[in-house]
Length: 440
Image 1: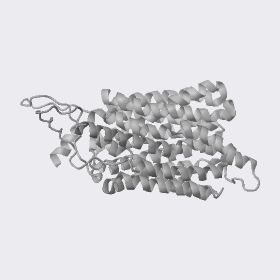
Image 2: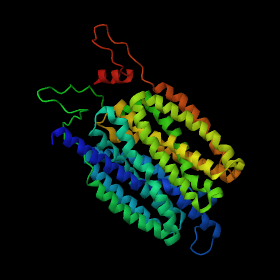
Image 3: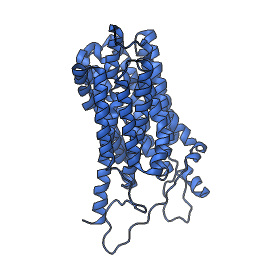
Image 4: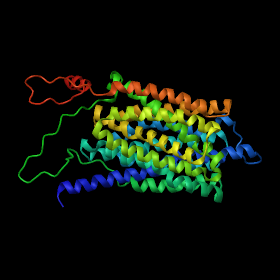
């Protein structure tokens, strides 16, 4: 087996291990199942019941999204400095600690601390270290594909966790189930962490094996932007705002889909969560492949417009004017698909625009928009639902914001710079990259 075959096999091992880690940490997207159990306990009352206000039931999930995102900055720094293996192990320990903590109490602040802060931080550490090492093993032409595959695990998690959680809630109750999940994911994430590693120093991925006697093609000049430079780049702010909108709108639906489906699907409402997860995962892979071919910005614009249309189409459904189970599942699936594209496109944007040297921290900084978007829109959605008794207003606001995001995304299209007359070939280069190269 030659060196190229060995590196390809190692690269796929790292990519699949990262996917497996995300399959465990993606329990975040099953929150709506746990939320339903908490809401039932609040309604029933009695000794040992959850005594929370209706508007606060989604708070642990909203805090988890926010903490997850900001933990990505510290986690990115950790994995850039100490490597992905240690970072993932820390993540597994923190998630396990958070789940074990909430299994011991029904108090609101214990759940905010355990599920929101501890588990959120742990998910951030594990998630941050799953994609970067995988991308480093593959050439730029596969950036979208590999990013899509690795992050698809996070979106796909609910396919097995949702029905498993539904069964465990009936068999063991909410708190015992959280204890089992915490212990299990510690061992799963810790074991897979052993397979995650960066390529050796000086490694350059190639698209095809080099023929004997021939010289490898020279590597293209890369741009490695330091985290402190991001705040001087206009596209960073555009990407941050668009990610805020796209992620927030999707997380709003994911956090409440089981509740919205329960009226027409009853105990089978968990199927809406699982099917949404399939769409979520598929969106990540498809967007990665498509964006490698037609460009990140074009793919993003298409996704945002489609998502806005789905939000508006969902309003009569969730208002009870046509809320059949099939329609709800279809809407959830396509909304999940469009949301999932964000999680493949924005890591690819980060690598394309700012390089791999500081990828962990750079993406962590950009990823704060995911957490802020989730926290703001999830919390706003729950407040509007408590006031109006429906999610209709939330979907309308999200639809308008998504259209604004699509307009902002037009500025992300790369602008071709005219080549000098003496240049042998004209290569599309982004103006921003030229400026950074000259500054080096």
